[in-house]
Length: 165
Image (cartoon, rainbow, N blue to C red):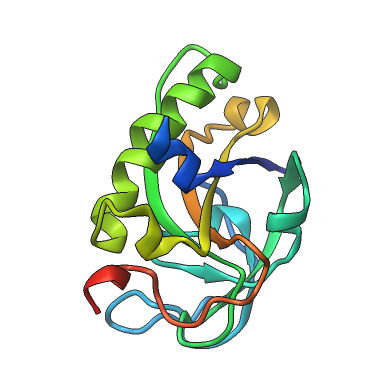
């Protein structure tokens, strides 16, 4: 079974200051959004997906295989806002993970939420999913950034263009 790892990052405000096969059928609308709560394989996550797994927020380091996708219009714990294929001779080490986080998660946050003002999205923090050594050997090259609530209060609605709505 393939696993993906996640590692929470520092609060976004502080940062401003200084594919696998699924056994589940995921119903998506024409816009690609999930239509109903669905158990899914972590490799089925796509940019714009919202998930409802508190373990994403609770653990310092975690390996996930199964997740619960929900429509973003329903309360959820996290939202994927970046998915990018990475390269290299092996899975990313700590230095490369930091580089990927800054390059993709931090830099894309402003574009996704619609502002570079940290107070506009003060209730959010950022985390990421990345390949494990085992999943890398099986072809996993997907790095994903997720928005989560700072205080674990469920999010409702997409954070995309949050500051402009």
